[in-house]
Image 1 (cartoon, helix red, strand yellow):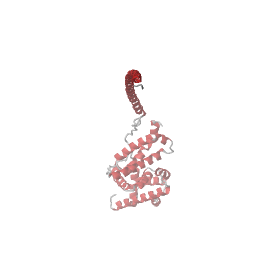
Image 2 (cartoon, rainbow over the protein chains, first blue to last red):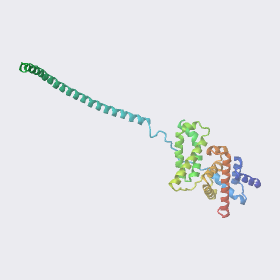
Image 3 (cartoon, helix red, strand yellow):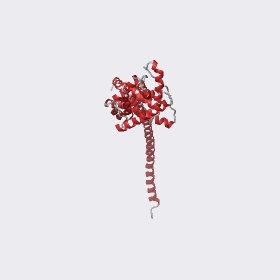
Image 4 (tube, rainbow over the protein chains, first blue to last red):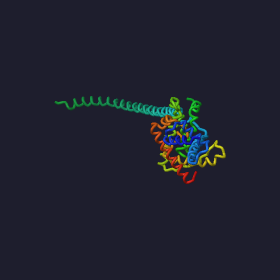
Length: 143
Length: 169
């Protein structure tokens, strides 16, 4: 192995000037060859990097696909409940108004009757007034 | 996009986003929770995704932002990170003990880097993305990425040499 060349590559490596291919070459060299003592630490480094890469994710991944909290189905159910509710309340209100209307008509009828009879009485007043007028004529007529 | 198409497009990224999340959040549990939430987010955005040039870059960006937000709110809430042990698989037994040790050390050194540099090291040195992809994921220009990467590599190297000097390796 040409260690001078490797050391030059290592220097390039530290300056982040190596290509991927050169870095892969370094990795494979330090994996296999007998390494001079002064380069032992590189062996450790590159072997560790290679070891890091074999770690894998083993758990199963669950995609929560059909469970969004907000759902149009729930919204439509809520809407229909709301509509039923408001129809109920509306009907109640309508009933109340009908009842009030009926009561109003009843009262009006009663009051009409009252005024009718009062007017009947008024007729008597007219007659009385007429009577008064004539009596006044007789008794207060100037001589 | 149907669920099947979605899974075909997005699931291949899951290990990469998981490793990035773990690099940032440190705890495996939290990273797993984060991935779960991220995938639900991605699923909800499936219409947007189907029009994207690179779903992978988008997923990585989303992961990065999500984890940084998580870290921020955690600092505000003053919660402690839970460190859990790294479990390596697919590495032959005879190498395992030796590796475990060095992997742990490198991991610790990476965790000490500023978040930005940690992400870049993760993307470049672990996941082996090219610079264009990294720029797209981080929304940075290439010079800035290279500067940060070089700084991170030098920091790790320096720390590593220091440890070697104390005979920890």
